[in-house]
Image 1: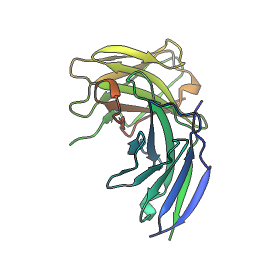
Image 2 (image 1 turned 90 degrees about the horizontal axis):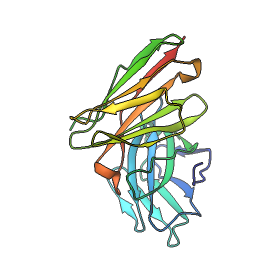
Image 3 (image 1 turned 45 degrees about the vertical axis):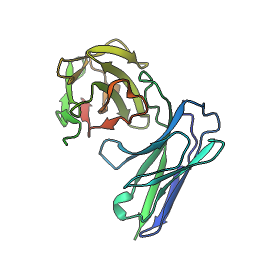
Length: 111
Length: 114
């Protein structure tokens, strides 16, 4: 079973920041937080991952709370192309652990 | 840089037949993972290959098997196809061991069983 909890759906106005929350209260010290998204009929797309510190790349920012029990993915200026299912996954830093996908959050960006 | 490529895009088979799905990882990646995304069931881990060896396996019957070639490409074979095998089969690749490194996915092969 997935070790994360995400809201099933969210809406965001185009051009505004989309803030997607994720709870992972049982996360272990050696588990990373990964975010992926899946646009309809495509494979999941890697967005960002982090361990303790906040991370930023060209797609998004990842904010991890100090106790690491929750995190937020921020898309700074959402566009219609960001409409997708977003998955938050925790994964041990070891090669033989697969990604365990939950149901994710369906983000709808509205014009 | 080319991403993960999968072939064929679509595959139609009948019950009892065998299917072969192919995956080419990103250049430099040695680990290949296979996932199944069936309608209503979400993404389920199938198999992990690294350096030509099967390293981990999900909760699937033995008729799901595969292999990894010396160039790190991979095949997924599904024998004795059943209706419930209809799904999107996704391949992902990563650097060896995947330590702290992301898996990158292809767009999958949609397998339909008639």
